Length: 216
Image (tube, rainbow, N blue to C red):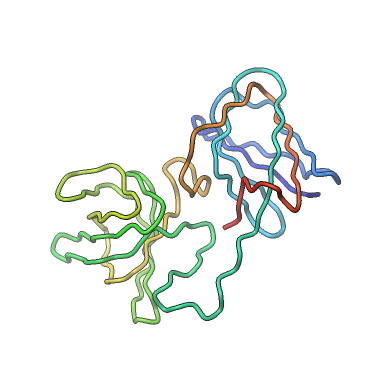
């Protein structure tokens, strides 16, 4: 796909690398990458496509990798009032079940994905039900069954200390993974360690035969 710009972010140094726009045949190149693990994504007129995996750069040579892009289907116009809306560059996590105003603690049920201490989450109220909640907060403390925990996963309940009040059934979104910005807002699998390189050459194909990135 012509005109695609690939973005890589070093997870250790947080330095960001960008390719030039891809050629007519979908080829582009990123040079002078340091050894390490990288989050990746792609920029096009349609929006930002976030990668599902981590790329590992191992040594000084050249590596090649194909990159397929997919646009997620749009939500139907007539969605239920209980269905969370799509929020650009954010990943839906779950809902507020209860809120203790004295302790300023909310019980959250995580419906999908995961969150860690240090992640930034977005609390959004359902305006159709009269909630005006809308604020961001970094997770500083959370517990499960009365015990402190550093990770919240799908299918479980967690208590999180908040800086502001929330309402029952407010939605919770993951805005930013600690140190990663909007990169990698899906569960991360095993790192893919390439047998090289200080240079990466990508090929972008359309339509994709195998999806490796998606758009928020």
